[in-house]
Image (cartoon, rainbow, N blue to C red; front, top):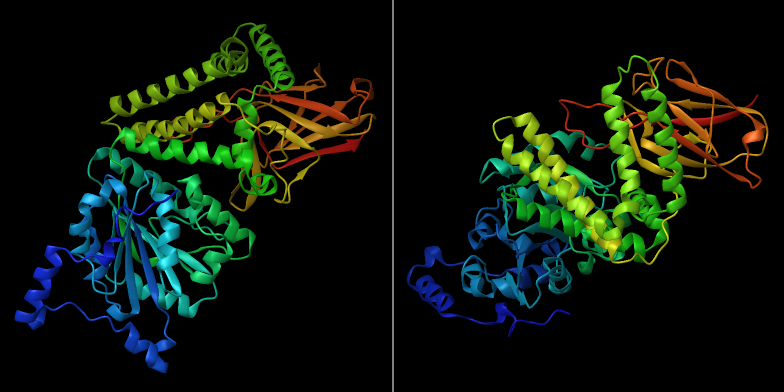
Amino acid sequence: MLTPAGAECYCSKPTASRWRDLAAKLFPSIAPRPDTRKENAQNPAMAKLPFISVILVFGDERGRADHLASWTQQQTLEGDRFEVIAVTTGEQSSQADEIRSYLRPQDRLLCFETNKPFELIAPAVKVSTGDILFFSEDHCIAEPDCLETTLDYMENTNTAGASVRWGHINPNSFAVMEQRLADRDLASWIDGDSWNRLRLRGFFISREAYLDAGGFEGPYEQFSEVLLAARLHASGNPIGYLDKGGINHINTSTFGELFSNVWKYAYNECRFCDEGDAEMAERYFAHALLAMHGASGDSATRAALKKATGAVLRRILSERPVRRWSEIAGLSLTWFRLVSPYLLGARGRQWSAYAMLYMAQLRVIVWRNDDDRRLRAFIDFWMRGAECARADYMAGGAKRRFERLPVWRGHGLDVAALGAAGCHGVETHNGTTFFWTQPACQFVVDQPPADCRMTIRTAGFRNLRERLPIGLFWNDNALPDPIIDGDRISVPVSSQLFASGAEQRLTVVVPPLSTPGTSETRKLGLPICALQFEPA
């Protein structure tokens, strides 16, 4: 619950303000700009002009009061076309006088007793008066034409709003890694098919669209950004991207800051998937549901995957001479990860996740003179932080049972299966939509008992050598060696292998794809764009 830190700060008039008023009388040229909003309201021509409310959230260690100057003193947009509402946590109440010194008469400062900055947004929106809401953070510095280009965009497009371009301010070499990661992902982020463009560091939206979508849900903290983007997309108001007039963002400079942000995002993503709208979770956050399913310890699925992985390992080891050492190592690690839940339990999975996190942190430190390896380690640290959050959440006991999910639903993929365990989310590359499996994956197939031929199409995203050891199992029974033809893997399935019920289980095991020299940190098995069955 939010409680005001004393009186609302914009109502008080401290000593510093009285000195400014005296200086304005003695030197009229430096007097602050008067509040002309009442005059504009009485002028029909001015009353029709859009008005922007800039909401700046304080509460980050990187934030400073003088960043406000870029909004209140340096914007090219006329000062009477926007207001600034700075909102702070109780921890920043000591900065109130300094923050207020950068505000104009029409601006406001709100202080509330909470340690969750995202909970500050709702009261700020409530007191704002703008037709357009512009959100940013205390560690962002606006470019002079930021609000002018915002107004131009809203007046000349039919979209609900947009995120603005952001530049980078890097306090140290660690922060440079965040910039490199952002630059790498920018193309996919602003792609026309992307719905997840909303970032609190700098975006604007019409007041009506924001309120209709429910706004930021403060208790979900960092995850509330993506949740709002999903709700806007679901309501037909996706956020666009404005490649000019943006902000400059001060990047994360310590392991602690990065881990805190990643952990809060992933933990609250788990909370929503467990407690929130199940249909929305499946539509927009299937990757998290799949990860939670993998961490939930589904014993039957894990047992089948472990058995199948062990069978493929034995097959490779039986070859003479043994030459597939990299594949043996990759599958051995896959097998260990499947076995570890039985050996370690929920708490053990937590310890394992944090051990991998610290290993990634060590690699970031060790590779400080190798930019490519350090970036890979930085991304791994980021991903391991999310795994730690999921392990922490699942160790506390999830309320919902996480079943195998059809990750391909709504993406137009020809996959004749009801769901899967051990898959990554759907992605698009060069116009082709597909998803990666993990090295060990299981599909639930609704296929009537009959002799048939199964075909997996990979779209050519992995080189399928004729001797690539692919293990295919139907209800735990090994299928014959598949026929590999270009990007197609096909194999006959005998009706004698079908279970009595309608649902059948297809297990796929393949050595993990080696991705040296890239920033890929996922464990990748097969890329799949189609899974088809035809009568034999």
